[in-house]
Image (spheres, rainbow, N blue to C red):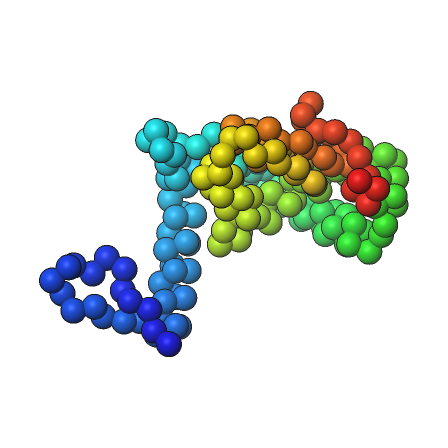
Length: 183
């Protein structure tokens, strides 16, 4: 199975790529787009789409620090990463009621979870939320969308459609707090 090389000139014979070559090229292209940064993806008006550039959490190592302060900052980052992994494991192995109780008993946990999740997503070749946003922008504005587990409401802030945002804890005034198992 082979795919035609995109961008071949009209007069040239079409070269073909093996499936492996095609996948590698597509993966490399996605990686290049990711490295191009938040302003690289442009909307129809020639401007960067709103909400597509994920705001980088300020790095604890951004300011010049002494050796002990830098070590402390790295250790704090590791502790936050470990706490994110713990919370993530709790969410995967518990019911939605237990997850809601976790976040009610420790409100800071939800923010730590979302910060850690955002750092995790930054490492992915493609953010699925960006793909959903591109899809919705090609659909009619009359389409009504429900975003379960919306977090920071990126979809709602990036499309013109009516978006109902649901999550366990509100990070934004747009969020309707709910137990998704009961919707």
